[in-house]
Length: 616
Image (cartoon, rainbow, N blue to C red; front, side, top):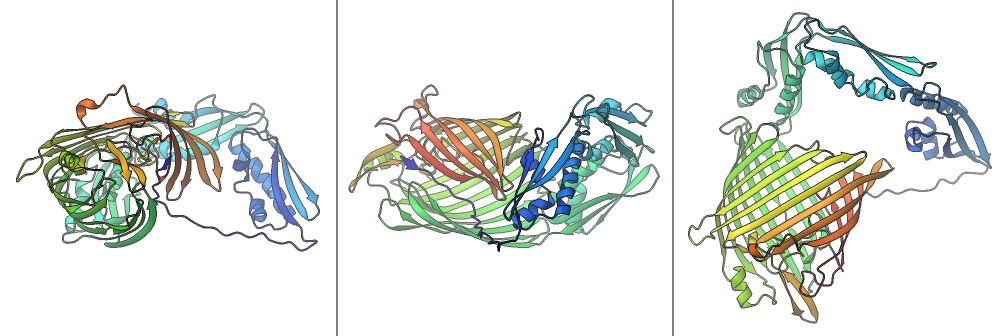
């Protein structure tokens, strides 16, 4: 059994102590709820003044006991329970006090929507307005949903050109009939067009970049949606800490606009560090970066990133340094709006199970957004790698087969196309993501002649509170196979029945007194994963959930050897804790087939993974 461990999280330690109460000093031990069905204890406890007294183990203030009872009534009324009754009582056990709230919820009110004052031109209809309100006639009433929809309701008119529109939105509750009437009274005002646009806080090339990102122009019909899209596009420049777009407050049908921006700090320095365990070593990592925006030109950004590390090899042969040093220069709006040109130089010294590789790499690339969802990138890559510390299990014949007996030179043309239709890039619930990577090696000056193709597709679908997620990823190298481009699978973001990089063509044999398996990668890859992400609780404001997953995959030495009907499969269970630095994830995978002596990571059945972020 092997443990796959990748730690990219900071750990926060909290110290606590128990307060000792002198005899005769009353203190609040607990707050309990009885009779609540629609709202949970956690929902009711949030915001209670007594909850703070409980946390600090102070006495229960009788005044606050009654105030919190009124708060609970108000919380139920906002949820549509107009007949709710809340009774409070205090029970004492010596100096310890328990406050108990008994709740009779009653029946929940249903919604009735009334819309008045829409424009007479018929462009904005009642059905359009109703789409912006997540409460339909007959549905259970929820004031929070109504309150959150006010801006969207008014935006229906503003997006149709009615910049001066006003909305009087009210709720009338009728307890006897258990009806909540949502009354929406619109005053449209005149239909408007955009007037002059003034930019404040930027000049020269930055002001021109702002102008190129404007989604509206003088004389066009007014639209609040166009203003919001413009604001997002200006933030995307990455040079401003605040972006405010203010239409004037006049009454005419021409709306003048002021775009006011505040520059962000031009320089940023960051440091970090951590420890990690992988199949090769125990590692101490550090990282430092320096970024300067606006140099050498207003639309340029220069970055230096250093990632030194030192690892103690798990085979007992000693310490080994690792390094990645990168310098990057980016130019915004190169050639066209939002086009980004970049030049990168980096040097790497990395350690793997089969060998260590080191050498420089240079990239010249160009990224072009194709609308809001699509992105294309193309570039030229030149890299050179040398190899050392080759595993003693890799004999001379295998070294020649893998290309480890000579330096590696790659001169290639790289292309990537992505499409992102997810509702969130970090924790998606709905949508899909697709990516296609192609690297073509050009045989110049002894360089490798090959074509590497890596497509990937992810999909997400909500099923109530559960999120169903699926992914498929493939890879193939045709022609000569560079050692550093070989595929590996296994790990927290791959086939979780294996440790990191352990699902790959490998060789097993004695090294000293131990029998070891050394993976060296393959020319073909296929991975697929299916997940059910299930929220279960909230612990100290942090959502906690479980994941059920099924992973399949394989990596073979030749493309012709890959069989989709004979994959390695693993089932597993994971736990997610959503923290301020992202979801902390622990997964355990169990292999259900192909565990014999001739398989990768032979006789291993379980693998454990600790990581940050979702698997995909």
